[in-house]
Image 1 (tube, rainbow, N blue to C red):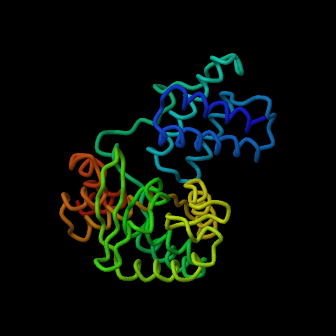
Image 2 (cartoon, rainbow, N blue to C red):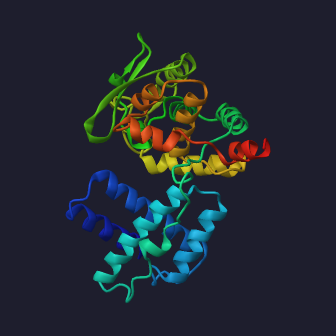
Image 3 (cartoon, one colour):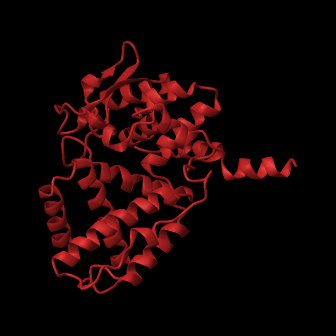
Length: 290
């Protein structure tokens, strides 16, 4: 029943002219909400309620999910709730953007969640025991800062092993080049010559293959990182690795304009908004010096 509703919701979003990335984001958020309800063994005939929504948001907060990510899910579930109401699948709109989005004080609104150095080390050690494809996914997300939507669309021809550069097609069709570290390139070569060569989709033009398709789906990447996070004991998702990439660059002295270009931001102001900030720990340290 839930899958049928979700497919109908996806169709409506597509027919409404929403961007492909928006459709995928909304559907993914609703799917994870549905999964939460299934784990709670609730009545699946009721797709959403105020109680279900509030319980889910408290669960995400307890999991340590960033405020910005939780607010994105509020927006997705609000659109879903509106669609259910219009189609008479529920008799009430339970979610209010104004009331339910988490408000934060000025100076903290752009703070992002990143992995600290110890967590990065734990993540890298974990990758050592992973299959070649997953290890490559981890290295690419951590060391290039690409979006998961960009990751799954990388083609073999996008990799220039001679110059150690990766061509990435980002939002709006914009193309950028990202230098590849030697260790990233080495992991990539091992995957291409080894595990990838043995796949039944080895003739695919895409770099990262699935067992069932010629390219991996971004939901599969998110699910894998959820499993990694559970094993390591801290929350981890693709955009957190992107935030970590940008934050580490800036902390190591990279020019903000360089970080902006590598991240594929629309402008330098976006980079400043999200990455010229201090962490809560750094703020506390600064106050302790008084």
